[in-house]
Length: 114
Length: 113
Image 1 (cartoon, each protein chain N blue to C red):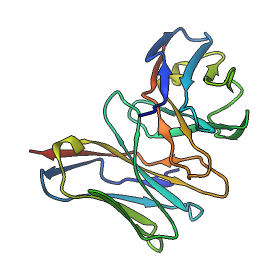
Image 2: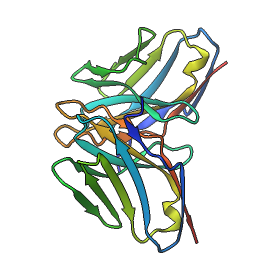
Image 3: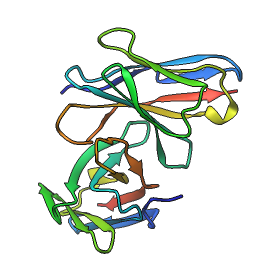
C-alpha cells in the first residue's frame, strides 16, 4: 500500500542551526502538508502546498519556516534558525485531488533542538 | 483556543464491548469531520470521515455519528479489539477549498482482553 515516507526519523540539532526535514508524499497525491505535535499537545497544522505554491499556512509558520518541492517526488520543510520550542514531532501528509480533506500521514520526524 | 475538544483523555473498555469516543467543536464553519488513530512513534492513520450533510457514516466496525445542532460527533467501535488500543484524534475541516485540519487533543483508548 502506498505510504508517505519521512526522513530522518530523528534529528538532533543545535539551537540556531538550519534543519531540513524531508518527505516523499504518495505519488498520485497533489496536496501536501506539514503538521507538528509538541510533546503532550495536539497535532497542529503548519502549511499546505498545492500546485507548487503555499495554499494555506498557520500563525506558527512564520518567516523561519519554508517549504519546497525541489523535484517531482520530494517535499521539504526548512527551519532556518531553530529554537528550543521547535522541538516536536513533524508530520508530513498528502491528499489526492477531488476526494476531500482526508490526509495520509507519514511516520514523523522527531526534531530535538538542544 | 480549542475549536475541537475531546474532553476524555482516556477510556478503558473490555474486549468485545462498544467503545464510544466523543468530540465537540465550536467553529460553525467546520463541515467535514475525520477520526484518526495513532500508535506511539507512528503518524496518525485515517479511520473514517463524515460530511456535515450526513449524520452517520459506517465502515466495518467503525461508525461516526454527527449531531450538527449540538456540534458533537462520536466514534463507535463495535466490537472493540485489543488492537484498537491507541490514541484517537478527532479532526475538522472548514471546507470551501480549505483542507487544513484542526485536531483535538486525543483520547487514549485501552481495550482490555
